[in-house]
Image (tube, rainbow, N blue to C red; front, top):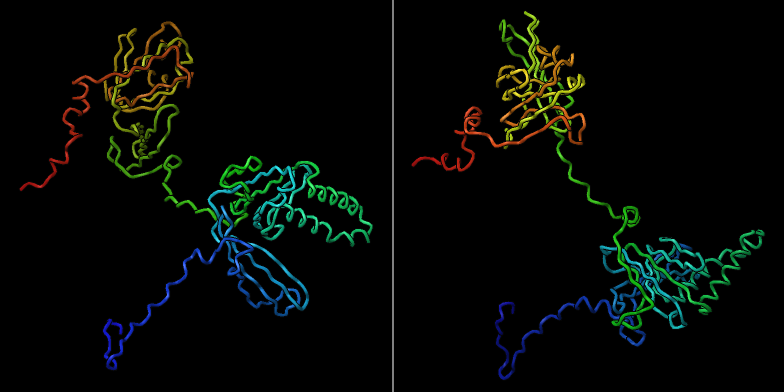
Length: 429
């Protein structure tokens, strides 16, 4: 039978094929549109424990669909032993991507009959009475606008006998407020009903759907962090980035030999960030054998696309305190003294202007002569402090220029191949 073959039967009798199994019900049939005229829409009854008297009661579940909204589950429990009952609704879907706020202007008695789905995460407010039902203070309900107000009145009246018996001063004020709520049911004057649900699963009926309802404003919004926590939604923890070693706060030490006596010595190295410039590496060597000391500065970056020429007009002794970084590729010039210091003569230096000009500082500091101090670095890795930073320094000019062929030759850039070098690495065949 599984292969579709038909076994032989008595002569003259036709063998009918086995009926195909009935297809499973479509999901839409589980959630039928809510209607009092649908006789086939019956709740499912489940015997369950009463949490009031611990006897068995009856739970009824109805899976239904709200027109122009979504599917919900209506549950009702009743206990015939103690009379306790409870009704609530739950959304049959997930928490929505955005929260929703319904603002309804109630102007006539017809508005009191609007269908309302209020989940337990929704807050209800009536601004005219300064009245609010906080989120999670009530179970979800499938009701009407009038039903919401009636439910609020019942909640306030519940403990009134005990308050009156105890002569509680709030009992009289609550009675006055209940009168105001009952007047709302008669729509003696227009009022505003606001249902704010961060889960996005509450609903207020639009009787004119799919046309626009002028009395109803629907606002979708992004939830706050507190609302996410209230709904039990945990944000994804950001991926942990591997910790990078910060060399700015460390002094690295390594062994080397003294350049004077060749005895074992120790070199200290530190990465320093120069304000308004870049990172540099300061290296200092101290030989305990002969007492020789050296310090050198290396640029922490690559060769810049353009060379740098910094011209400072020295007009005051305070200019001598400016921080200065002279790379090993920088030349120094003082035109007024016909003085020029070529590249790599002193190596890299991170010092002050006074430290670099110690041989001629007396002439400059005494103010006998005003001079220009020019630093020309074709590699673009030298720096002279701007004491007016971040504003421009009126006594200093910084120029970016394109290197000449000879300067590129001195830096070894003419023979450096930076494009298409992968082709030269292809295996020879």
